Amino acid sequence: MAVNLSVKELANLVDHTLLKADAQRAEFKKLCQEANDYGFKMVAINSSPVQHCAELLKESPVHVGAAIGFPLGQATIETKVFEVANAISNGADEIDYVINIGELKDGNLAYIRQEMEEIVSLCREKGILSKVILENCYLSDEEKVAVCKIAKEVLPDFVKTSTGFGTGGATLADVRLMKEVVGDKVKVKAAGGIRDLETALAMVEAGAERLGTSSGIPIVEAYKEFMEEKG
Image 1: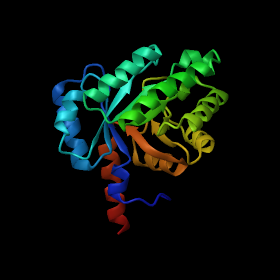
Image 2: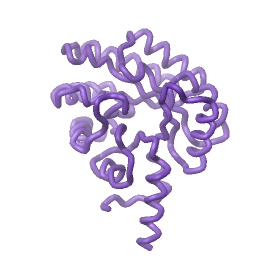
Image 3: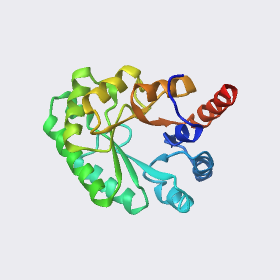
Image 4: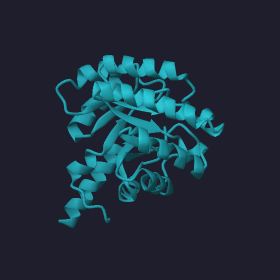
């Protein structure tokens, strides 16, 4: 394992995720408790439970992240901006929004730029981190590069590989490609299909500075064991 991280540092890269349609309040309470106990960076949730989770985590350093336009990205810009503002007012301090994939596939880069500018501007104004989800499983490398080039100018905090709800998740090739384009201007978040320690560390080594996963606990526990064995 080439990545040189403490257990605490690895845990702090994790966005602890619960985005399923039938998630209930008891599950969100458990999610928030786990995130606090393990020192995860954020709970990644849909916008409806934001207020509940923000209340649960009000004394915790764990951030509350709202997924916007999730998972398809097919809401209007105005709708996404409203959803962002509403999530922030309810206590979200990070925003992960899905781009309009159809507009990108149609070559409408002006639309992708406008959407990014409006959402990132609002987040910046409110002091909130912003992440742009590309959903790479549907995109050509040229389309991924095009969005990352826009991000390099608009400057969201992160570009993100996937929702975890598409036909594929994060790949090492995509993380490397995105990082190569955005450089040090924007960070990269890998999400989707990160279920074990080997994959998590490979994503970090490829350039990811956040990991979206619902497997954060087994990943961190496996790393604890590895570090203990290492001595």
